[in-house]
Amino acid sequence: MSLQKNVSELLEAGVIDRETADQIQAYFQAKKAKSGNRLFLVFGILGAILVGLGLILVIAHNWDELPKVAKTLLAFLPLVLGQGLCGYTLLKRKDSVAWRESTTAFLFLAVGACISLISQIYNFPGRVDSFLLTWMLLGLPLVYAMRSSVTSLMYVIGISWYACESGYGSNWNGALLEPNYYWGLLLLVLPHYGQLVRRHPGSNFVTAHNWLIALSLIVCLGIVTQEEVEIMFVAYFSLFGLLFLVGDLDTFRSPRRWTHAFQILGSAGTVILLLILSFDDFWRFLPQRMSSLGQVLSGPEVYVAAGLTLLSGGLLYRHVRQRGWQQMEPIAPVFGLFVLTFGLGIFVPIGEFLIDLYLLVVGVRIIVKGARQDHLGVLNYGLLIIVALAACRFFDAELSFVLRGILFITVGIGFFAANFWMLKKKQAHAQS
Amino acid sequence: MRNPKLLWPAFVLVILAQLLVPGKMVWDKEMVRIAGTEYKFRTAPFDPRDPFRGKYIDLSYTDTAIEVENTWLWGPDDVVYLEFSTDPDGFAQIESYSKTIPTGTRDYLLAHVEYVRGRDSIVEIRYPFDRLYLEESKAEAAEMAYRSALQNGDQTTYARVAIRDGDAVLQDVFIDDVSIREAAANWVED
Image (cartoon, rainbow over all chains, first blue to last red; front, side, top):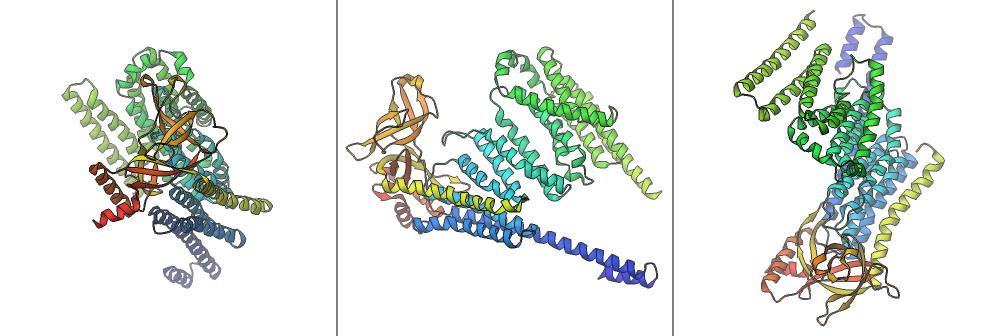
């Protein structure tokens, strides 16, 4: 209404002509229809997922009164219904994203409900990993046949759950399946993700995939661990470096900061690992743990770490070539520095000091970056790194209370002053 | 999928697979249930929960040890094929074991090694029927009924299991020849 009123007012006042007024109205009407479609999509998907999950819960009740045949038929009912709905979508509503996404999400969950009800009826042994693997393999083709991104998101969650069950779970319920199938299962969904990134860059589905795939990789990388836990720190640093640098590629750039899943997770992960390794526990036992080269080379960890480091190294080279050393992102080279520090730490006890130094440099460089970009969030992130570093040293540094106190007061004043200065600068900028 | 010619055949294949895999599960278990040999295994249940499949009784069994000659040949999670006979009380007992599929019989079970007690030359077996799913309202009562049976001391709990071609179907759990579902219902009424 108010738009109509405003346009009429502008038209009467002679600010715009009739043609422009029509164009404005047509533009906003099209936008309104688009947002209506989006709502339909969101509620369609939510509805389908809720009904599907509800079905699983109703089935979990395990109706004793029903005879076996009725229970078995009931297990197949949602599955056949879901298949029918997907078939109808392919026939009649092929171009409607809302229909494709919601019917496929329902069918995907119905497959899980069917298998779980059958394993309940016949008292299958308690193995969640084999159940998840069967479910995911039967659900995956739907991602491609129906071009469904919600299904591919649920698939990523499912295979991550599988990896955690078989990789980190206890085997008291029976021998676990091979957790490393996860990597193959993840590869199978990447063509869909790649297509999504190419065709709809910056869309919400791409953002959701970025977050889930990055989180899945972070959670599941640990499944390769056998004996050499220390090497996995190198692997994780390189994974975080890789995520950060992938997020820096043009494809994933976006003005909306919360969509930067790779960069946010890569950066936060790197900083958290640095903070953990700024204590001396890790470095004290490192020379002893790395004494047998033969043993280290016999495990898979070293090859995973080397592979990830090489990949990240390649991207870092590209990053530096594009931007030059001066403009390099502060987080970008940390994984490489850690590899050097790790190697050095085996022979010389200076690991924790170097890590302190990296944290300090990274923190300061992020503060400078935030100040240059006039971005309060980035500035405070840098300050937070410095505060976290100071807090960690508060616990273990052999400094007097007076010195620690002064350190904290300085950081606190710095925090206040930097924010105050930035806000003033913004105000001045707004007034001018 | 962008190629419209491939779309329908692919979709049909997907839905067939989605029907066939659970269908095959049902078929295999029905074959064991109908044509398999039924044994009674002495049990000891308790009551947890599964995120997908609801409430169940977790079962462990009393006769799970086999004495072997060379324990170094066995390791956790190894496959073992078992043949059973019935003891004078009518309960299953392991008659023979082997690392290969027994020939000339379909009445054998594929199980796994739980752990090996080298000093006693004992291999502990894990049977592939460790869960009985119950209606969610009955699981707690079933456990109570079971505990009360244990306190009485003179009651026997056992699982009835059909076995065929290595596969097994757990039919029911009994407290003194009364199904645990009935026992649970009676226990609530008491």
